[in-house]
Length: 121
Ligand SMILES: [Zn+2]
Image (cartoon, rainbow, N blue to C red; front, side, top):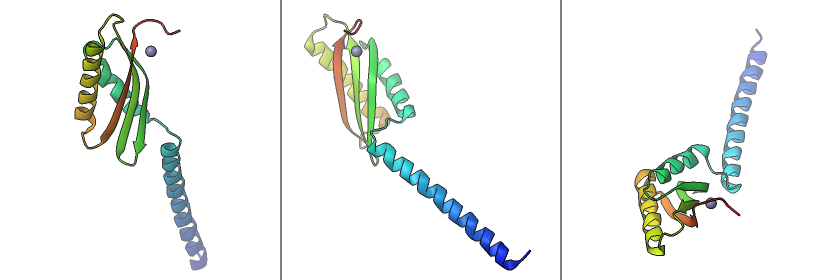
């Protein structure tokens, strides 16, 4: 095999590798910009929230990443006749557990919307 051809193939391989890396970096950056919630994080949050007593349902979980920091938002169902005080305690328990499990320095915000349990209108 000609040395020039070998050189050419080697260069092609390197360019391809750099190209793939570039695409990966671009996709990663776009996901952050496009507000993409990583599925495995949503699943993890879902599991944590469902383990909290008083929570009957959780949906619309949104995990926003800012580099390493996380901002989490969700809607949680509680018993309709529950007092605001009780609902607030549940929200705090959810927040505490999320921070404990995902890392206190990492989770910079947890926003919980509480809704009365039952069908949505
Ligand atoms: Zn709801």
